[in-house]
Length: 490
Image 1 (cartoon, rainbow, N blue to C red):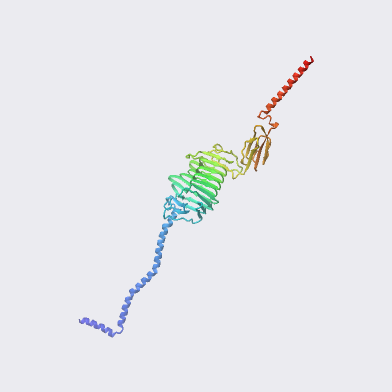
Image 2: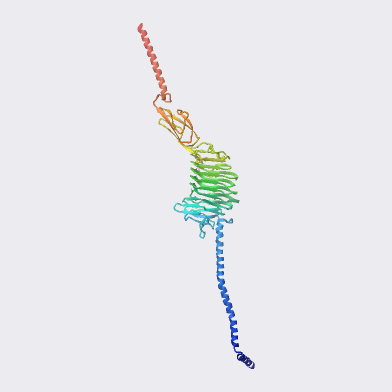
């Protein structure tokens, strides 16, 4: 009790003896109490300062994850050598949109991104089913770099080329590889630009075929279209198609250095204009041809084809009748020689044939009209006869032999010509060398004059018999008159 009281007194004494000391103690206590509050405020201020940074860093991490999950997939479809997808770029003809085939199944699936070329343009006109490429360049390590997805499989696709364009498969592996794989029944090339299509490389066991382009029917009307098969251990083909028609422009097809190499392997080839250049390269199996086909029709234009084992070859797997039709003047050059400035004339076929000079073991064949100047040669006959030659277009220097034959009761009267000079216009058979201008030749005939006697109609024989009878009759008359006169004298 005493102790508690003393303590109390000390406390009271302190209050009374030291005025203001109590307030100082309270202030000290207040100071001690404010320290945690200051720390809390500092923490809150620091949090407010760090929050934007934390949010920014978090957003950056999220965006980076998203980008890292998206960009490599696009790069994978474009150029990544580890891409094992079957297809790289898909073109949907129902919408005119390009897609990256991330699933690699050749179909447009949900989630596959739309592809917009980083350079150049690709414009789709749905009303004419025309895709215009201008500076469009695509490369993919997928076995097939470009695939057309055509749900109807009935509508032709037109490629309008402008500027320089390319589609390339950088694939290196086995199986099959294509630069382009088309689904439309017909691919039509127009325009004044260029498109180069290249297949991938075949390596390893199980390698089969590398093609620049695989399509149904291909028609070249303009531009320059180049299709190259890749190199490797399989078969390399520039173009694989059911039919190939060249009406204009330039088509260049070339097989790579592979087991077998062919510029184009197709059922029918028709060339009526433009230029077709085909080449088979080094073949480990020894089979290298510029063109392999079943039906070949040449109506004009230029064809140059060559291969180590043949310029042309027939498709051994086709059931199509094997035929060749040449309906235009053709020129050819022997194997492994440079094309001379002066063309060497060869035989012209007006029907089907497979004889010389189109011998398929020849390694180089060149036929053409566009680089040559041709002239019209019109041959006709007046009434009363016929001529052997057929009117047509022939290059300068072409030797043409023509025979005029008179009908019964007529005779040949001579030639009327313009554009060429004849050594003997009265000869029934003439030979001309086509000049550098158009030529007209008309065979004339006449009937009912003395010149007709002596011909095969027998009139000359009748005249001789009649003369003999007249002479015989005169002799008999003279004989009887003389005899009668002698008798009258007796």
